[in-house]
Image 1 (cartoon, rainbow, N blue to C red):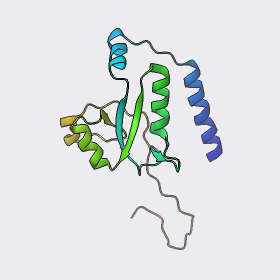
Image 2 (image 1 turned 60 degrees about the vertical axis):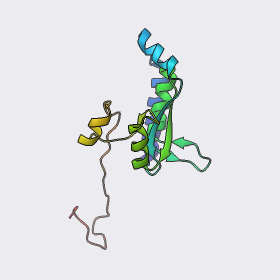
Image 3 (image 1 turned 120 degrees about the vertical axis):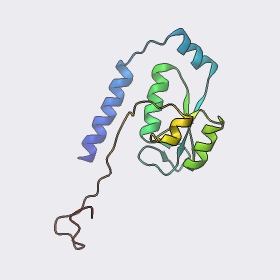
Image 4 (image 1 turned 90 degrees about the horizontal axis):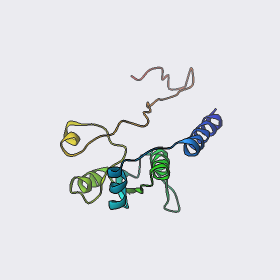
Length: 139
């Protein structure tokens, strides 16, 4: 099952890369030219969105989506890892350009604009039927 899902996601990513075209306005092209590196802060503990690999590279949903955006648009989004509270402060001070994988809160609305979510995952707990701890509900 997991293998099938991974193959499907890889196929979708490849298909999107191969067939997606966008047309940027002059203003958008100028923005990319003036901002050759756009840094988004994120938390290093937020797998599967962000995964810090042993070699220091970053993978995960966010990295894959940004790679695709960079390929299609010519932009250069990068992720900066750290504690999310520290990344938030850096973004508020404009030391970095924004945040990745944030939720909309009233406090964040004071400082940031939000895109539409590109993915939404539910947190689910699986247990075996008749498990030894008798877990059969969230309670």
